[in-house]
Image (cartoon, rainbow, N blue to C red; front, side, top):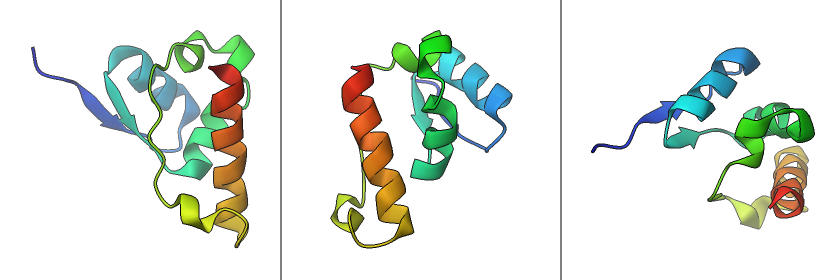
Length: 79
């Protein structure tokens, strides 16, 4: 069947529901940071099978890069 894609909105409850029900969730580093901070209490976050990061060249450059570094590091730890 067709894949179900959703975009993270910033509403954690709705984003967790989209993550549980969908196949693909598109999220900014900031929105994924909010979702994944309590990953131990959120099975949907622990069940993610693939992360694709864009803009890794920003790591170490600015605030957005530091958030991306945090979520990439957390993704490695959760996996």
